[in-house]
Length: 396
Ligand code: SOE
Image (tube, rainbow, N blue to C red; front, side, top):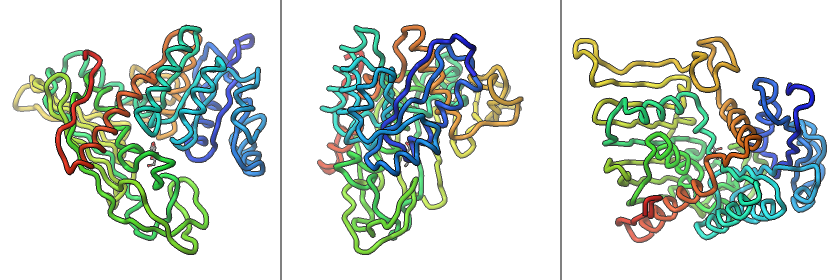
């Protein structure tokens, strides 16, 4: 627990399903394992259904529940609003919270369109002038092995980046009878595999290399266009009910692009990769070596150093669980490993540290907009039947 006398940070969360549960666990756990300069207080959670949100508050550890996010934002005891709703409400809630002087943590992808993301960036810039901060939840950046990969690239250990090979593979839609959910509704989710999981690997490719995509060429496909309506749904699975409805998003996205440093990048995002549950695979090949990561073995990083003696050179399997590795010192002894939820806790730790120091947290809303532009460009390329779409980069 935080030391007595530590100033508090009142947190209000909007939404309480899969991501809400993951964020709640992070707010609960961060002050118990890390020394935080602000003590998070889980004041209130908002949701539309009074009974369900009350039950969620109880289960997830929130003091109170409300049925209006406007009411949550207006409360004096809420300093930070954590947005865990589907993408169609991110912009409205985040902009209102920033205007009310509340810090914001918003789930990814930042928004459902570039225009919404731009409005969010503008609101974040105005708020920053008053010391109010905004961050988008590209959580996988906080996996220790990913942080190590970024450091090795930044330290020049793999030289100039030639290839980025990034995949995000899931299979929860491989069964054509898997029912509809908001993630399959374009008006709620913005896009399908592209924005839901492709956004993560775009962010990781840019985070690990420190470069940006300068253009892309994309191909989207929807394999199953009609699915049962759900009788019930929780997390990523549900029971089929009576009748069917349309799938209005992509099931799979393939795209390739050029990085700002001149390297080539390829991406694949799908929920139809039978047997692949949460395989986030990112490999970067440079002029002097390579790094490779797979979330299904998330405590490992593979590193190849081309300057090693040829007789013994090969990919090193680094077990990223030493106290010297990022975040690990606050958890378990070496070799005991971390899981999916730990990155959410690290996200809270970093955010709270930045808030206390008056520093802008990353990934910022501007970083979220960069990813949003990539998603939009892939969609435009695919809609046009393929073809190159240029992207603006920070340098111009
Ligand atoms: C579903 O595909 C999902 O929950 C994503 O929405 C998350 O961002 C990802 O972390 C896990 O998979």
